[in-house]
Each structure stands twice: as C-alpha cells, then as structure tokens.
Amino acid sequence: MNNGCVPVVQSVIFAFFKMVRLVLFDIDGTLVHTGGVGRQAFAHTLAAEFDANEGVGKVSFAGRTDMSLVRELFGIYHIPTTRENFKRFFESYVFWLDHLMTRNPGNACPGVKEFLRDLQALPNPPAVGLLTGNIYLGAQIKLRHFGLWDLFKTGGFADDHEDRNHIAVAAFERARQALVPQLKPQEVVVVGDTPFDIECGRFIGARVLAVATGGAKYEDLKRHSPDWLAEDLGRISARDICGQSSVPVTAPAATMPTRTFRR
Image 1 (cartoon, helix red, strand yellow):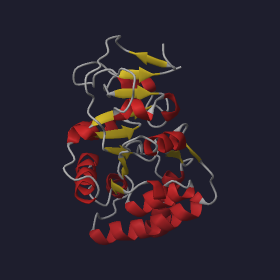
Image 2: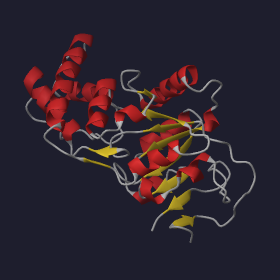
Image 3: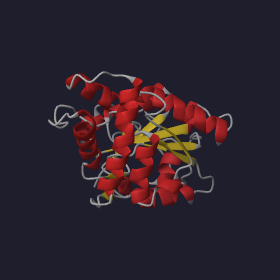
C-alpha cells in the first residue's frame, strides 16, 4: 500500500503515459454538495409557474441533465413541452436557485480545492473545464457560491444538448477550438460521481476518474470500470492522473483494470 492507494492489480508500467491536456469536471456530487437546493429550485419553479404542487419526488436527479429532468417533469404534470415553456421554466429556476443558494451553505466535496490547486501546480498544467448536466447559468450560480467558478475556462452544459453524451462532445470541441488546439480524446480526463459520467467520458474516448462523493456508491462505480476510482478527490494525486508523476503508474483501463484509491 502506498499513500492509501490499493491497485486492483500489482503490475505497473514505466512506459510513456499520455499526458493529460484537459480535465472536465461534473458539478453536483463531484465538486460540490448543495444540500438539495437544485431539487428545491425545480419544485418551487413548477409550483410558481405551472401550478404543479406535488414536488419532484417522482424523478431521480443523480447524473441527469436539467433539460431531461424538465422534460420528464412536464410529462408527469401534463405540461406541453414547448420552447416557450422550457424558457419560462429556466428563467424562473435560476431566480429560485440563486435565492436558495444564499440560504443553504452546502460545501465543496472533500479534496476538491486541493486537487484543483495541484492540477494548476503541475509543470504542464492541463486546461480545466466543466462537463455538467446543469444549464450554464445554474452552473455559474452554484460554483460562484463556493468560489470555484473562475477556475474553469471552458465546458459543456445542458444548454448544449439534452443528452449528457453529447454535452461531452460539446465540451471537447469547445476546448479544442478555444484552448487546446489538436486536442485528442485520450488526452482528456472526465471526473464524475455517477455511471452517467463514466459513460459520457467513454463516449468521447476520454479516460475517467470516478469519485464516490455523490450519486453512486464506490462499489457501484467500480462495476462500470472507470480508469481510476477514489472515495474522494483527497485520496488521489493530480500527478498520477495527469501522467506527470515520477513514480510508476498502472496502465489505463483499456488494458488493465481500474486503479482504486481507498483508505
């Protein structure tokens, strides 16, 4: 055992490990816990704008996109899924979200601020962005509350697409055009807390770091074979993930099982 790292296999390689040029983070359950404020803002919006007062308990929010959640809730409450109703919902939602965030302190997930700091301290720091099911303004409201918004230079959001896999495509293309010319999929790491995050990372050919700080348990995430798996971001080194470590590293999941980090 080395610093709490428990590899699934003992084999290691000293060969060149592809350097990471872009790290994309999910928000809810990966970067921050908001204490259910997003869910509350959805419920307030449905009640205030559409007289739908039975709440949002019938749907699961973990790993979902805002657009897909609204579409499902509109179906439950028999609200027409028109462009005008989506616009009406989200204009009210961001008001409620901002209002409720000021009343609920929440917290950054364990190790997040240190991991982000360590990424930027690397000799060749990667670009850092978002890959989230939040709409852009929702992401901004949540992360500004924790002083994290300005750390991210690019991203993909629910405004880009209803499907998280295609949000990942948008995040990749936006970063390649604006920040990291000639970026290759294998130079990207997606960080998330649900199987949906693992799936969307695979969809764009990226490697995936899964953290058990949100919507799925550690063992559930392990069954989806991310490249790395940690209980939280405090248990893993930015150097290990980005291929800028002086110690041997295991091969990525394409050739070897998940590398796990527990204490």
